[in-house]
Image: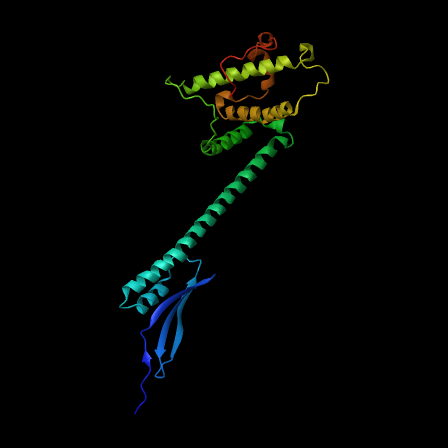
Length: 266
């Protein structure tokens, strides 16, 4: 009597995922005549775990291996999508965002360092009023406008609710701001002479006061540079000689404590 032939079970398809790869295998199980069984596994294909799309060749093999069993194909494809492709896309997006931010940070630091170094260049004060340098400065300020428009200043917690009153015209606001600034400069100037008896010789100013003065170095330079980008506001060569005709120096001297009109210094 001939031996019974081994009974071969239908081939199944499985996935294996490790830290680097997604692997596709075909699996077979054989029932032997003695009641025991044996299994075998064959490698079909693989692709990197970092892939954001399933390779066409891998998908084609998976489709062929699951012919007649569309539900198995869908289960394996869903697992690949959920456990491999979506996390890989998220990692790629995060890495792209990190690289983009790093590039912008590097560019901004480079620009800031170079701009900060300009006033310390030899003969800066003597040469910066030249027309060609003023034009380059104006070009620099124009190029920075898109960056400034991207800034989102934090609103103070006690910011008042905007009223229903119409906003002033831009030039009226500019005039009011510059009036405030001028009054502030006049008052500061009146506080500092020793003859004013406010700060006597050898007075040690607090660290916060010194820090504010240092900030003023750059704030005033930035404002003058920004205004100088407009031809009407640009200082001509030898502009310091115009002081008597521009300022009424007698009316500029005010008593310490003169109130500043027009609100806050912005």
